[in-house]
Every structure is written in structure tokens, then in C-alpha cells.
Amino acid sequence: MGFAGSAPDHRADGAREGAQVQVLYQRCAGIDVHKDQVTVAVRLPGPGPGGRETAVRKFAAFYGVLREMTRWLAAQGVTHVAMEATGVYTMPVYHALLEPGVFERVLVCNAAHVKNVPGRKTDAVDASWLAELLECGLLAGSFMPPAQIKAIRDVVRYRRKIVAERVSETQRLGGVLQDAGIKLDSVASSIDTVSGMAMIRGLIDGERRGQVLADLAPGVMRAKIADLSQALEGRFDDHHALRCQLHLDHIALLNEMIARPGRPGGGDDGPFRPPARPAGHHPRDRPESRGGDHLRGRDQPG
Image (tube, rainbow, N blue to C red; front, top):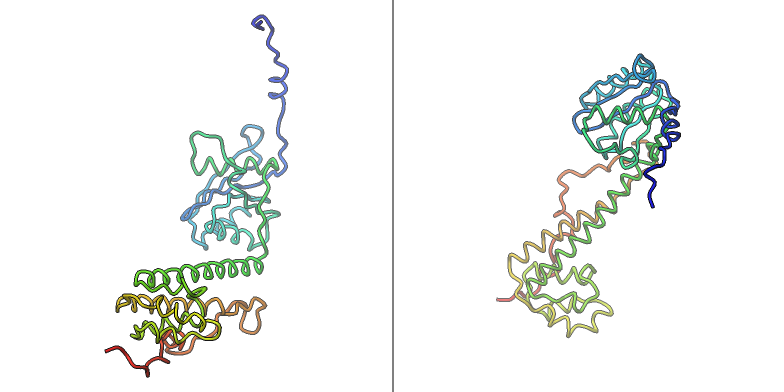
């Protein structure tokens, strides 16, 4: 069966040709953002197709120049602006547009939602495509939190990374012990405990006798002294001691950063202002980062 003799139906094509997308915003702009340059396309009433025309300009991404871009857009009578989300490069452009408060809406859009058709792509084409979508009301902006919420979110996210880095640094410390044949974590629940750190500092200070190191175990760990004595016998030498000390210094610094209050509520000295650091402050000045001062009076191997 075939339909070769059927007459083509042009009704759908005619409907498409007669259809026009309604322009909701007469003066709007799309911005293609890069690290060092932004390309701005402004859609305005004019003699072009559909009674519209596009003006394109490029600006350096310096913040002062972005303010100049904002003033130019305001002079064009632009009411709505859209740009793709490009990570940190978007934020200076976004804030420069918000500063004067002259635009009705500034949208930061998910790049997947505004992807252009494959083909010849340039910054000007991408900016124009954004402006054309925006003028028809086809773009939805992503959620942009208020400045104070964003500041808190940035600090919390960074703190989460510091916590993850502390976990990684502790694992690196455990790797040094394994290389030295020290099986502390095979007996203790973790090396990152008070007793575990005391034994590691003892190793750093030169103590190599497993029985002496195991005797540092407090409380319930004392029931495992026999196993600890065997686990702490190894080939721990000076280069292991150096590496362990570096890891301990780093862990102590990370602990200090995690414990530091962010003061998001502000106060007389302003929100998030870091506390003053005493003169001469260094991670090695902290007792917990110095290796095993409590063992220096013990007998050392000859």
C-alpha cells in the first residue's frame, strides 16, 4: 500500500507561516559571558524583520567596564536582561546589572535550557539568541539567593570542603603509617583519636618501642595493650616522622579553620570578618601540633 497519489496537505505549513511569536518585552538584552569579555545583544523596535533590530557590543569583563555596560543598557531603555549561568564568571556581571536597580528583571538561565541549534556559533550569535528568547518570554531564570544568604551558603560550602580535606589528610597520615609497617588502625578504631595521636607523636619524637608507645593508651584501650605493642612495631624512620609531622600540622590548621566562627549575624566588626591573628602565630606554636612533648623525658633507644 502506498500514498504516492495523495495530494500534499499544506494547511499545517500555512499555519506555521502565518504564526508569529508575540514580543512581550520591547527592549531587552542577552549577554554571552566569558572570563575576560562579555558580548551584549540588545533587541529594539526597528526596521528589521518583524519590526525588530539587534544592536551588539562587546565589553571587557573588568568591573568598572561592566558598570559602563549597565549604563549603556539603561540608556537603550532596556527593561529585561538575560545571561547563561557560567559559574563564577556570571556573578560580577549579575551584580553590576543589579547595582543601579534600573532593570525590571535580570535572569541567570540554565545553559541547558537555552542551548542554540548546532551550527555556526559566535559570541554575538549566542547573545542574540538569548535576547530573542527573552523578548518572547521564553526564558526562566534560576534561583539567585539574596546577598546575605549567598554569603552564608558560600562559607558553609567551603567549610564542607575543609572537613572533607581533613578526612583526606587523615587518610594520608594513615598511609604513611602503613608504609612504615605501623598497624595502629588494625587495633584502634581510628588513628584520629586522642590516644592514636599520642602514639603517633611518640613515634615522631623518636620512640620506637611498641610496649612504651602502647602504654600511652587510656581507658578501654588499655585492654588492647598487647595487640597495640605488636601493631606499633615497624620500620618507622626519620622521613616517616617528617611526613607525619607535616600531616599533623595540616590537620591542626584544618581543625582551627573548621572551629573558627563565621559570625554570619554580623556585629560591630561586620559579618564574616576573621578574628585577628596574634603576632608570630604559626601552626607549630600550638601544643597539639608539636610532636610528643610529653614523651621527651622518657628513655630513648640507644
